[in-house]
Length: 605
Image (cartoon, rainbow, N blue to C red; front, top):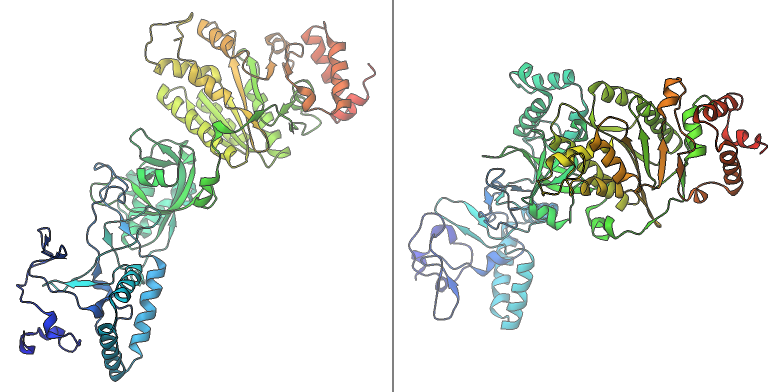
């Protein structure tokens, strides 16, 4: 080929004419697969072989493609795409790694300061050096070029450049490359989904009006948050979100919010199966990171980059020992409940049935014996005396007014499902809470769950249990109590690590044979039992604790030896005394003494 036949766009690049071949221009990229030549090398029919200069690391500024024209070909790899179901998502967008941005910026700055004569001299020297290289040196250079992710480019008739390979990080890759070197067009601030969920409806309405959202009055809070995030994303504002992961049967998961008691909402964040497998995520993990808005045929926001797992770096997840492999042991560290001189309920519980970290306790209560008030006082004592403990109150099949009262009375997370909700809802929040607690224990945290009540939870599991043909008395399926037992049995003290404490209420004397069967099944599973007596309530004596029937296993591991001897002496003195007289005697003594230590020291038994 003569120099006259060389395309004008390639004149001046110091490319020998013999490197060119006759070709026919094509529109876009060739659709057919490249054919093998006699030398078994890949070659595109009618394509132009790439000059060696385009593989160089230092690309002259006057030859480099504009950054806004650089794209990457679509990648159909299901693993990199996160295997997103068609009804949930189709594609993700890939964020350019920061090291690529800085590297590209440095090259452009260096080349922009060079003189034209200096650039021409460098090109001539590079051509001469390449012609004298041995085959081994050329292979070495190719390996170095591969390290920079193949900086070759093909130009098609439309003038669009393609970069062949991109590096995907953290399993959050995409099939489209967006120029993210400088977001000069960003006109909206960064928003955090968790902060929006904590805002009041009035504040959200003001924010929605500022973003130009229409029909705010007809939107509920979750829908309004969804529209705010969507409008903010259209203005190129960054979005961050967090929540507790719930992995579904199909392999993908969603981040649920404790604000809505882990109920599915429109602003839930989608996590792909590849992300879940990469970080070994489980139900109950707290995930936070950068999110993106839904694309076509998508209904949910998607996690773009996982930045933290359970408020720790994602790399630490690999070092975590699974909950089922941790070693359980008897509780050895006590949860002190004594809070105020006039709080007789917690003071008596501290003496009669001490509670330790990792306790599996059962409060046996007939109707209207004050179990809800007792649980409120226990919760307030735990939050005040043990601030390192994470307290969760789980209310199953409860009255709505009781839920409101509990939220206002206790400074702790209250997760509830009312009696007008289906059994599936009761089971779903119970499993979310127990899985969340397990993940916290794996990170050496101390967690306390107050459950009201295990009887109603067992009823919900019994309703959802498929018919097995083996029915116990009261209509309880033989396999229905396995899952509630697994919930209650998760309470344990981990040797050398965290602990999970569960204090649950069990209903008796309700007139239901099913409740009696459920109580009998759970009766021997706990290591602490607190009995409430209906006869004390009839006399208006609170707390209505039956001292003789209440107790804690291995209480010698929780109490000081001197304190233990005094407690045993007190029990001997009250043995055989009717519950009403015994409780009146203790309350009358405690009214005169401010602390339990002074109370035990004044006993002459």
